[in-house]
Length: 95
Image (tube, rainbow, N blue to C red; front, side, top):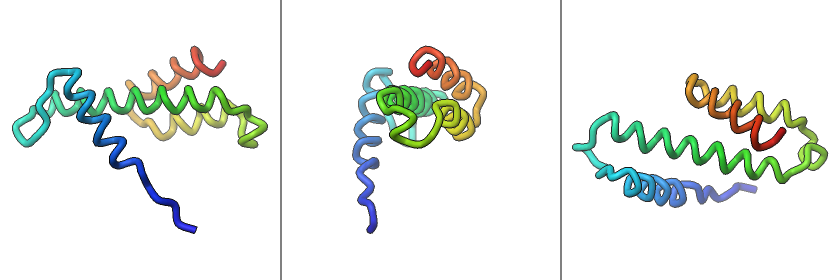
């Protein structure tokens, strides 16, 4: 059975909302720095939401240890900044 992907409208909404918060006008004339700030904030919030959700799910429900979940999140986030953020959030949210 195929799964319908509803993430695009949510990501678009989040991108627009964060851009508005940061005072960034998205589009071809936006600087790479401004676009990067929006993308970075989307990533931070997405990781925080994921960790918050995972903290409510017990490892026995997922058959995965919390350490494995943390390792997977760190592997996915290959930039040093995001990796550090995931480690900090993991220590403060889950453990």
